[in-house]
Image (cartoon, rainbow, N blue to C red; front, side, top):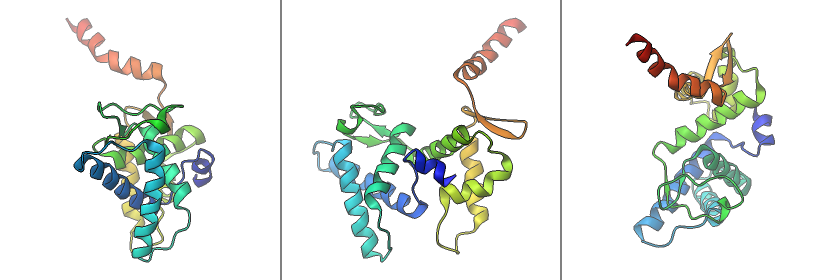
Length: 198
């Protein structure tokens, strides 16, 4: 599962990811508080890596891949739709994304981003089942801290799965990403039933 995310340039370990989440939020907040122009995404990615490295060194956390991890986290946030323009719209992935100023983060951006990573695994692997919750927990939230109970990480997986209920379904004990057609059918099913009742 980790290799799957690596092949998509989306893999990040949990602790560095959390540090980068915090640093990215700090950088965005500082620009807003100082009333300066928001940084474009490419510069913010570099600045986040530099500050994360500094904070990690100050806390004696050894990690040597901040540039690549920062790119992976920003990419996941971009495709999850949590990076917002000054108009409050998600920055669209594409050729212009890296040159777009990042003005704000969507509320709940951390869970939304990690839910997106979970969705990627379900879609790319195609054979993820409820029996894989432990493996998903290791892939997404693996920490080198034995004080963090694995049960808590598995609980986080099922919480994120619940948040994906409009995008992911469980059929025959296998998770799958809903097709756009099935989503449209679900959204129109209730009004059609009400009309029939009338």
